[in-house]
Image (cartoon, rainbow, N blue to C red; front, side, top):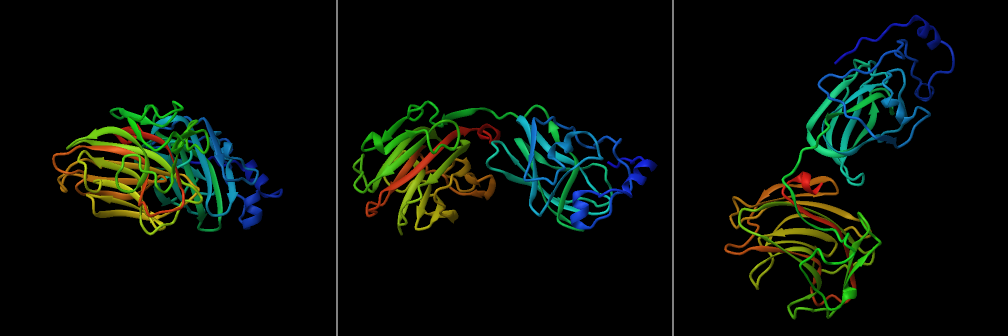
Length: 393
């Protein structure tokens, strides 16, 4: 892990004159006395991946590109806790860690975390730690393999001050991503219409509109509008919904990813408003899995009665979901697991996710209590069903 730095007398002399570095001036730190300009980065326990580009939250003139020049004498620096630097791998790759050579890493320990993202919008934290504070050579920080495109390092100050300063950084992993076992279905509206879905339940076409904006990904999303009295199937409640005959059966296991945004004037009502549900093949009773709003809270309920997760309702912002389900009527076999906005918010929870002797199918849109008067608008985008997390990422 450690690399011996060259002792260069001429650089020692130069370090004693001049103005010093920007972070030296602000923090009052002495200039380094070891010359490192001719040293290159070496890493241990890390197969470095190539990066397409690098960006950062800011810099003091020491730019983020310096962390890729294979020179320990240059660096990226920015003042303030929460400063970050972000590496784009150019495509999805399997990553397992980062190697970081910290500027002045032998005199201070930096607090930091690492997050990953497949789309540059939603990030999931994969590592939190602290550098050793004993070396300016690269240290490798490993975490469980993830398939991702972007890797972001957040620096939350160090043991001396609030500077974020990285001399070199590499993403560790393999060039070939882990492959899932296949995408089952996409319902992302990139056809420009509703043809990816099996059918609709709507009173008129203006209630389920494919629109170019706002879109979470690609070129299109679906705008769902429900007015009091909308009852296209002559059943309880008011609704306009898309239907996909996913036909989940006992023992199936899938991952689903989608994004939902509630309009800024989405009604606040002390009653149910479903926006995603897996309905059973029977005709009566609550769906075995449902995402719904009640008042100012979003809920996930399973088995028709058990709330397993909730979060405050947010309007006017896209909410990204990844939902992992084992479909079974046996509560010791079936389970749910949920990621929201890149974070695991519901670890695996065992529960009955279907009714005995029945299959399930997907309904997306807005289905609500008929007593609600104000118009309700919600947007959906990016639906994908796969057999592994990699498939839907």
